Length: 192
Image 1 (spheres, rainbow, N blue to C red):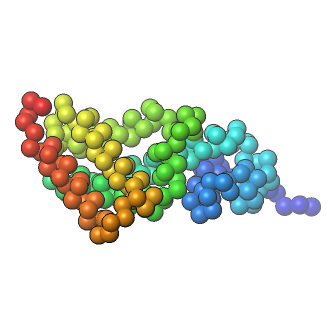
Image 2 (spheres, one colour):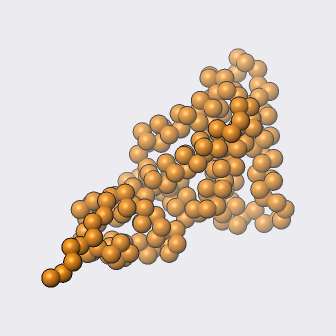
Image 3 (cartoon, rainbow, N blue to C red):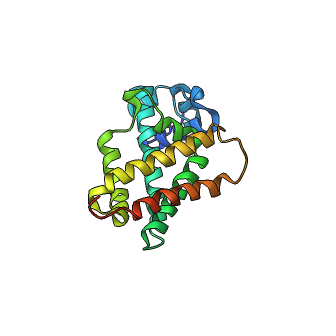
């Protein structure tokens, strides 16, 4: 008599897929390899995800949520807006360095059907926008948040792809750039 097959949840499948992507590369992620890594039969993941595209979308959504959770957790440490936003930026960079492949997959994906759900991303951005509003005021908060995200994402992508080659402490440079950006918003007149 054979043992009862292992039971897995969609969450376990998505998390294991993230681990495979991060540790072995995206090209190693197949539903057959995923099933073997989970100790289940090859067709079993299809009970939870229809295809690889759906799996990648779920991985991207989980990665996006994990990034937002890390950034918002970092924001709880202080009440001063610039210090709080700097801690958030540092958490963003740290997350990207800890999960470089899934970070890049999530936020540089050109396949529309594999991108995280726009409504989910917007819902995740609202708490960050509220924190930015403490510095900029509500009217400018969306523009300031978009600029901050573009600055952080661009810097991190250049760094992960080893395009910032002239030496120096890139962590310190990142902090300097983010602080300069935030100081610029702090100095804006209220009607802006």
